[in-house]
Image (cartoon, rainbow, N blue to C red; front, top):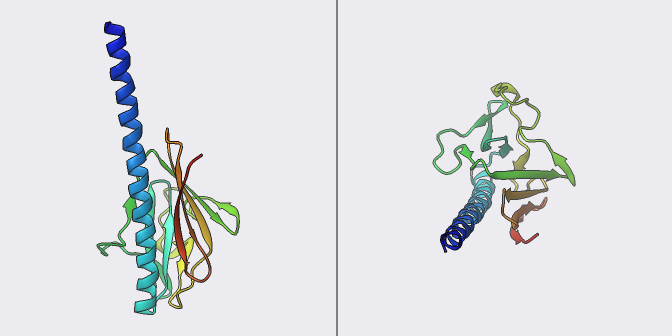
Length: 159
């Protein structure tokens, strides 16, 4: 009887643990899609291009000013964001997998060399991309895609 109870409690803990990750996956995917839409609209309204850059820990929105890209540190919505450790991003540009952190090696923070991987242009166009968001121990994943015309799409996919 004790073994049965331990088995039931363990099963519930595993289900609860997986559900928490699944919920976090959904929440982070939706947040990122909404922030990308906001960045696209902000680029149009301010007539300035914005960029998005991913790294191992999360993502940062960038603004082009004074001939270089700068991180939007103070913006309440487009500030740098960290992702939970169990989430994994896979960015595809032109059908090819893009390495996180673009052209800089991890640990290198040269503001003069900071480059976005996705551009949101003031004309409404954006870099065509596909971003897969996965969580460890969760079968489903999310896909955010964008086309040259600025159309963003969020889809949930079961594996």
